[in-house]
Image (cartoon, rainbow, N blue to C red; front, side, top):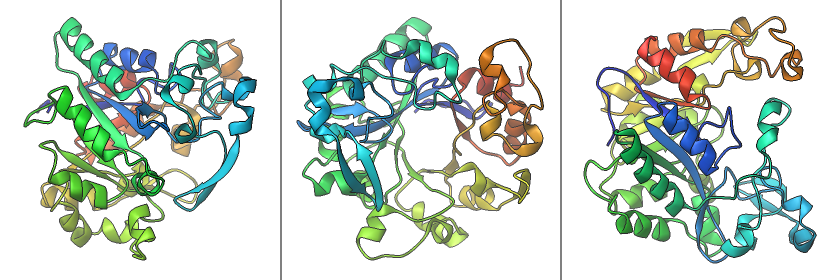
Length: 346
């Protein structure tokens, strides 16, 4: 496991997606070159069982699939973990078909400059991300970790495309299923983490959210919410099968009615009391994602994107400072260079 006792970890969320379309090898490579300790990748399955990096199975907003007439008849609607989606889904494509698509910026209204990279990069496989990690670790003379998330475990298992068997086999193949390997494994579900505890020698991360609850518990008729699971007692239970929690930022420091930073919760202290690390998500530089009092009030340059209030940068360093004061052990960030400067004080 990559660690730095002198500062919190910098986790490149979907790579360095503040600067390149998310979940592309270009985004991951840039994150590593900016100093990220870990490269975070979300894994979903193709129809032939390959694991690829996409934020969701639905790819209409992250690839150019809509511009491929040969796939027009693949457009459909599905309900995944209680949410209805319309578009195109990775599980309806073979890996060969999926590799004919190219990534596009997911939030072009907030990151207009990233659009110049639309259409340049294919959808990467899990194996390619691991190979990139190995190459960059050798080139940069430091161990760069990966931080894969198993997406929608219950859903994929229910359609006969369970992610975990291929996932474990891939880690085994690359020699990464071992004590001390530079890997964290994360999920918003609980049953798969409990099962992986018996199969992996790696630290596991229970992701949590400010609303709702785990999809696997809901599917089993268990109505427990994230609010219940992140109490002191709930965190103690998580510590029986996981090594860290990845909470939404608002679970660590709430936002007030005015969208400003509010009260610090007991989550970090409670998690640390059980031996859990805490890696909150997601830190971003744009006004749209920052607390109200840290947003930039006016344009800073003549670029067109800077004229949009929501897409301009505010003061992320002040937000990092507030969270670092709580004692968090790492941060998920779309802007690894900003995060590294914040956690090192440089």
